[in-house]
Amino acid sequence: MPFLYQTFYNFRNIKNDTIDISAREVYFVGENGQGKSNILESLYYAAYGNSFRTYTDSQIVKNGEKDFSINSLFNNEKEGTQKIAIIYENNKKRIEKNGKKVQDRKEIINTIPCILFSHDDMRFATGEPECRRFFVDQSLTLFDSIFIDDLRNYKKVLKSRNTILKNHEYEMLDVYDTQLAQLGLTIQDKRKKAIFQFNQIFGKIFEEITGIGGLSIVYYPSWKEKLEDNIRKNPTMQDVLNLLLEKRDNDKYMETTMTGPHRDRINFVRENKLFIPTASTGQCRLVSLLLRVAQSVFFTRVTGLKPVLLMDDVLLELDPEKRTKVTALLPEYDQLFCTFLPGEPYERYKYDTTKIYNIKGGEWYD
Image 1 (cartoon, rainbow, N blue to C red):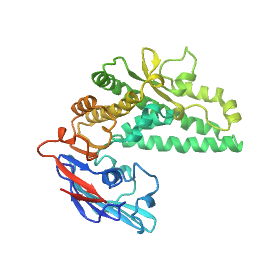
Image 2 (image 1 turned 120 degrees about the vertical axis):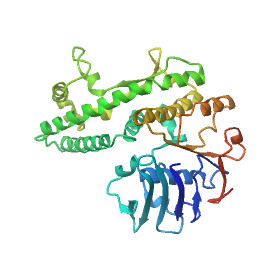
Image 3 (image 1 turned 90 degrees about the vertical axis):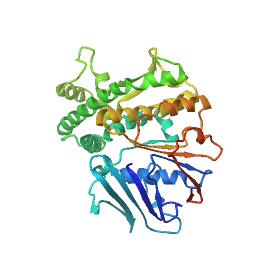
Image 4 (image 1 turned 120 degrees about the horizontal axis):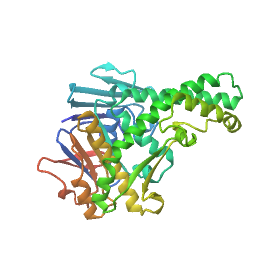
């Protein structure tokens, strides 16, 4: 099993103690506000070095305290038994892997491949375009550390280009256009390939759950949309440079970069029509849930590894029939961590080896 134990010190409202999480399936059961999600957050934090609930580390510290830490022991298929320690003190965060300081979070991202299912995933269906771009980019960063660098470098170049547009200092535009085109084409190519793979998975499982066929994910790269019809389907560096030059006056007027991967669109389409605007809330919830299932399958197909699944009350809003179907369609996983309210029928989903913890006031009981 990847996760073997986790030790907490001043993390949220969780008691300062060590919890054994070495079972293949672990369920955390308790009323709202008792700390179930905090434990899932700590697992995610160990995997990625940040929280899925806040960008501010100081908000994670237990009330009345100044520092916190978590220590995780896990067994990675490639590297064997590993230890991750994350220490926050004096308003600074330090990440250690096997006692050595990690300089960049990307060094630990591929160590524990966690995939989180949460209520906030609804934004992937109903949110702004940037939410769907984030989902696709996150899917790629789960296994491609070079893509992390591509995104970071693109954002730096974009920020610099936007700054000189806002300041009306245009001397460096040609240089930034070249960098933007090179990095942007790489990002769009990887997104395109990822979405192609997702469409081999997503539409099929959505139909199995709902009986609605033909739903697909469609990618609209910003640069491709802006190019003339006679330009090849895969634009070259020169095509993009010509486009940026053509749109330069508009960028100057708007004082920002109006085309590029940061303006790509990703939509759900069925029978040549947008699906989400007319879908029910339940269908939108299923879209977001099954995107995570597809993400897990995609990860395994690319890497050959099984992920750790973190499911935070995501089955709560589904009717009993769909809950059963979704749990039956869960991809192969190394470990599964779920949170449940006391009245939920979690007994239906458990195995003989499932470990169940009752959570109350940040403490756990067998």
